[in-house]
Image 1 (cartoon, rainbow, N blue to C red):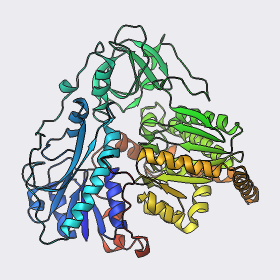
Image 2 (image 1 turned 135 degrees about the vertical axis):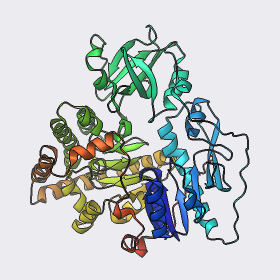
Image 3 (image 1 turned 180 degrees about the horizontal axis):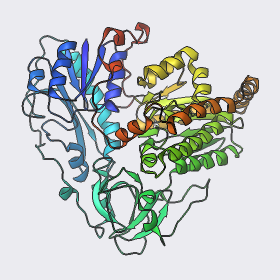
Image 4 (image 1 turned 90 degrees about the vertical axis):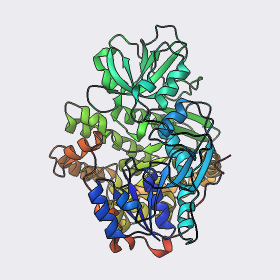
Length: 578
């Protein structure tokens, strides 16, 4: 089937749908919603059998939905309508939620139903971004494939929408999101997480009007609500009516990008106590704010890191490097490096770079810091290193874990193993990537600039093993994998083999890094490929000016995926209702 994805942006769910539909044997193209006239012309040129809209913030022009079957993937149950569905669901503490595939008509989110799924919501308020990338995306994929199946049936007619207890609701405004710092912690947490990662909640911190994100409850401490009680690893602790709340990221209302809270507040933090955690200890309280955690179970060391949106500024890199060195010094057989479920890593922190008074120097410091992490992984021969991609990854964040002995991905994640933003790239990718997929395939991945599913990555050799989609099932699977690899004889053979390979390399690792950094210096300091403009457009979320040719539904693009790599999509290991 010829399928066109009509989207506001090509990321997250859109990329996952693109990968899975192509692998299932369909010809799939992408069209970014850049304007009604452009859309009409682009759709006419493609003449698709079906238009799917997995992430679309704008109304589909009537000229399109009247002539081509167009199905909207709406993040709400049957009957729910409006642009703030997830925001309301989280803010109001809904117990169950859903996703509905709706046929586009004049009235938004009111068309006939093609497919729907429901799922439970956790009692503790989830981040909106986490909810969207987790249960919502999983339910959406099931709706996508049910819709495609029904579209192949000439006798199928979608059912009229019924309310089922849901209702049309307006755009959630900042007045709806407002809170007072004297409110209970749980209420404030729910408000902020319902707005994470956009638009955030407007409030005041340290006398500055900001939008707040990345909230986590803190331990109860005496202090006046709204006052700063402490800071740690880029976050600030703010007093509430009955305790405290960590804020990891803030954005100034006046202007500027979303930044780590301490970076934005700067001199306003004078006198606010810093409360560091010693490296390598597991805090007793689960509400202790910590980005890198280490624990040990028998012969296995677990180093978990979770950086907001997967962005890694120099401080994040230094903390992860310290954790790696601590873990490598232990007498374990296996070291599991596990990223967050929302994102494994997306490489250097473009927002911090953009906000710097010296962006080129900041970018240079950032790439040097992340390279130190990559080198530590590549050269570790004291343990078998498992890089566990529980979340999606992009650019240098993909490359970061490729030096591990085993790369273990969670089903359904998407990898973008290439560089954009006018950067050549580093992270030792010229060393690690060809050794995993071969020189020709490595060059193709970097040049094509296309997303790769976990399942496709396993076929290419980019990933060694793919575990279940459900986070709990993936954790159990990963534990079994680590246990298997922790057998002393098995681990010793792997470590020795790696040591021999490194010793046999014709060129030292430093040569690969030096070559990459030479190219990066021209990009960062000379701006030879438009890094400054591309970075600014990304940080400010500038509207796309057009659809990249590589994503269009053309004969050349359709032929890029080999027939033997097209296969049925892997279904979730655990039902959504579980």
